[in-house]
Length: 113
Length: 115
Image (cartoon, rainbow over all chains, first blue to last red; front, side, top):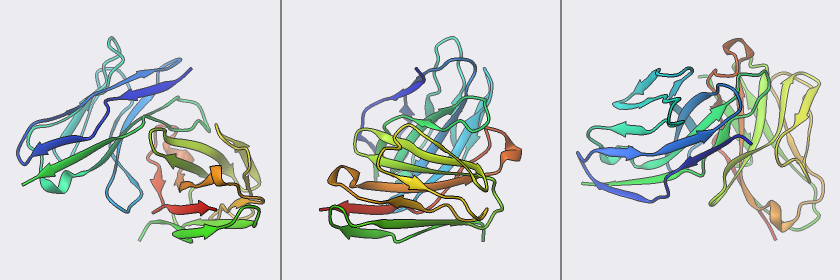
């Protein structure tokens, strides 16, 4: 079946550290890939996405590259800030009308000053 | 402001007492969806709707009902809630014009506790 696996958290970093959150997927066909972020007490917001192999999504200093050969979509940021503390969800959707987002379990990031 | 609203934000109820969680969006989106979020499980889709009067089951529909009588509203109905429906619920919407890879906009969530 279709699924997303992301690294277990929590991830605890100091401000300005480098961040990587691993995400791999299993899918039939060619999915679109997403990273959503959930700040405390809020709903999910789209952080970035990529719709085909080798695409790089980027936003707010975060980036992720769609790697078809390794079925991965790892999230990276060169220098995290305290305000980046949140839960990060990797997700995929198949390119069919009505298809749901399939989420990973989420990774909690905590950044301290 | 473009947004998805949910009410109530918090609800504590007892087993078997029917409840409705409302969801409304002001972006004229055709597609709306309900998810539940549980620790260690991520988000799972309950029901979705492609347009008015068109609804379909997601991955975990048991114990839930939905309706889509108006484009902007998509209420989630629990006719006889049970403790295993204690969860954090999110409503989401997106435009069909953006295709399946279009951004989904999420509401702030409803935390439901069933005693």
